[in-house]
Each structure stands twice: as C-alpha cells, then as structure tokens.
Amino acid sequence: MEINDANNIEENLLLAAKNGHQKAFTALMEKYQKSVYHLILKIVKSPEDAENLTIVAFSKAFDHIDQYSADYAFSTWLYKISSNTCIDFLRKKNVPKISLDDEAKNITDHLKYSTNSTPEYDMIKAQRIDKLQAAVNTLDTVFSRVLTLRYFKEYSYEEMAEELGVSVGTIKVQLHRAKKKLMENFKTEIESW
Image (cartoon, rainbow, N blue to C red; front, side):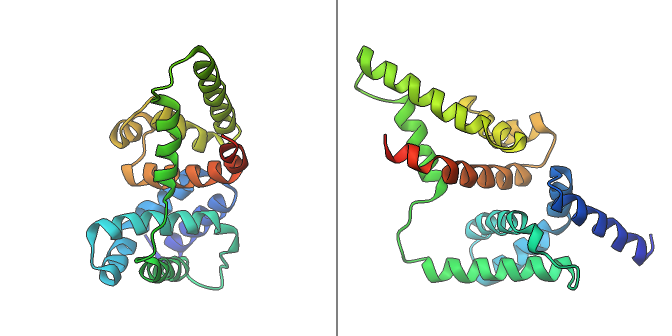
C-alpha cells in the first residue's frame, strides 16, 4: 500500500466519523489505541489509570471530531487531546469527584435494591425505570444499545463486545460516551428523585 492510499483511507474514515458512522470511530480507535495508551502510560505511570484515560481521550476526540482540522495529522490532534486529558487528570487527582460510573451505579442500585418494598414504592420504582428506559431510548442507537446491554440486561464488557462484534475497548468508549450523554439529557430528572 502506498502512503497516498493510507492517507486516503484515513481521510475517508475521518469524514465518515464526522458524519457519525460508528464503524469509522471503531477503525480509528483500533488504529491508534495502543499508541495513545502508551503515550498516556508514560505520563501517568499507572496501567489502570492509562487504560481509563485512553477511554476518556477517545471519548473526547469522538465527541469533538467536528473540530478536527485536516491542516494537521489526525494523530497529532489525538495525541494533544490525550496529553491534555492526562494533564487534567493529574491536576484533579487529589480532588474527590464522583465519576459517571459511580453516578450510573447509584441510579441502577437505587432502582434495583431497596428495603422500602411497599406497593407505593414499587410503583414509583417502576415509573423511574420506565423514565430511565425512555431517556435511554432517546439516545443514538449505538448509545442506547450499549446502555441497555450493560445496565438493563447486565452483560459483561466481553459479552457486549461479542454481541456487537467490536472490541472491548470500543465498548468501553461507547459506554463512556453514552453515560455522559444520558447524564446530560437526564440530569434534571435524576435530581428530582
């Protein structure tokens, strides 16, 4: 393959990603995931943090793909987002913060487990589940599907990857983006609970 062919393939992937095609996001992530992970690992020195920050970096990049300019190499833009993600992480490392995973777990735990098992509470709980499911259903198909598999059907990451035919890393990025979007759309509703 010639360099021009590789550039054309990447340009086509970026154009498809800008148009919201999830397969393009997956292809870009698979191409750059290892190099982004190693860049982040060099900065934060923790494999677990590097894995989580890799997911966050890709999520940020995909959420802002429309801001990418072809004036620069995509890898340069992605690495800048990754290094900025690390800088933000290191600055906030000592500040306690509730993550989206914690917030989503609180919601699902609140919906599933309660010692208040009265008919009135059961009805309220069912209404909340219906509202949450309705909010999930308003999201893009990819986001709705990963949230449903993870929180309503309780699939593992591996089961989700097998079901959807993508890598576990892609599932984690999609799930991170889906939870972020759901929390943005549903925040006021949750606060009233």
